[in-house]
Length: 97
Image (cartoon, rainbow, N blue to C red; front, side):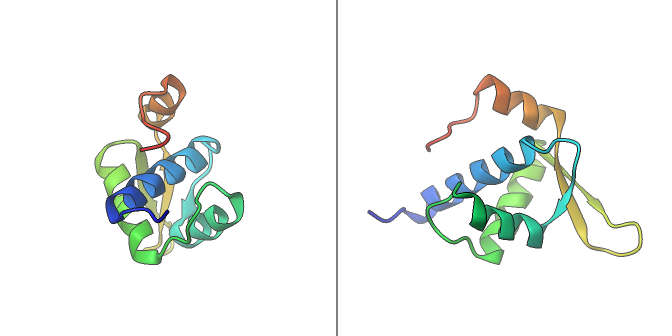
């Protein structure tokens, strides 16, 4: 059974947050996040770059992750916020949308 477009977005958002929450003191650029998500088995589909960009923007706007530009350039690095960690730990986010 294939996922609807909305379900893909929700699953990707949750997977990104889950992956970042388990590494709260580290930050990663989008390319690394996409690569690692493909290797972890958190998703049962292959996410595209534009889908990941939308998920990162959504999670940033929701305050669950934060982005910070590289000190010597413009590449953004993403990290779970304390609000994102807390929401994940309390189970207030649906794991299976």
